[in-house]
Length: 222
Image (cartoon, rainbow, N blue to C red; front, side, top):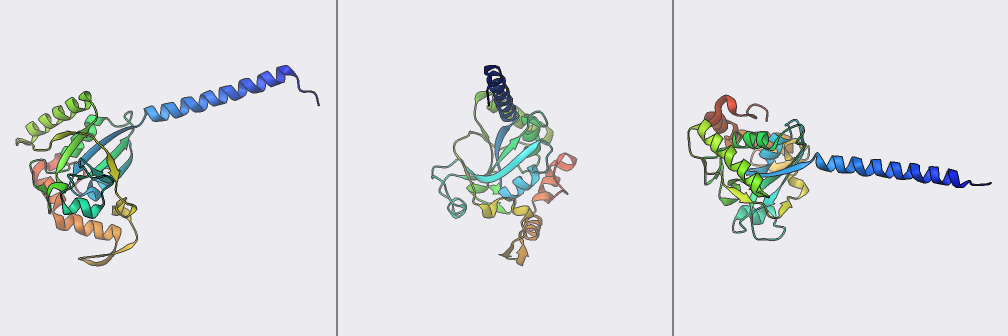
């Protein structure tokens, strides 16, 4: 079998074109993804809310803002690590903007509460917006100013520099739609059922609706 040089060149050119297209596709995919990290009390609730938003690719529960490496849930909720329960939102900026997500976030929490959120009290349940550069900081601060004007009250949610984000263990991811049976104060329940009972008992949606009224983006969707 005779392999002609021309055939080899054509084959090599075809491979190069395919490789370039693959690289271009990966670059485009990376360019279409940004992240936003926020803390809004119970991360189960924040994750559940934002995974419903068109343009959000993923929401991941975790911890940030503290000094302990790879902290556990028990360490954070016990206090002293400086971490907050937080959610890392990965989104397509062509489908939903960072500003829109920030607007939704502030109207899905009680940003006037400095002691926690709803029934969850303590530092680890505080609200915060985390930023990576001056432009993100300026946008977050402007969004807070607008939200405070709309609310007619002062907002205590701080804008903080984003450090390491530590994902929570698998038990806490997508808790709101889990099917495994867990033992709760409501008795043995599937995770999804336990989540709904917790959210209602904690008064989250009731307080958000009281504050934001029709501007509350997630009330009634839990």
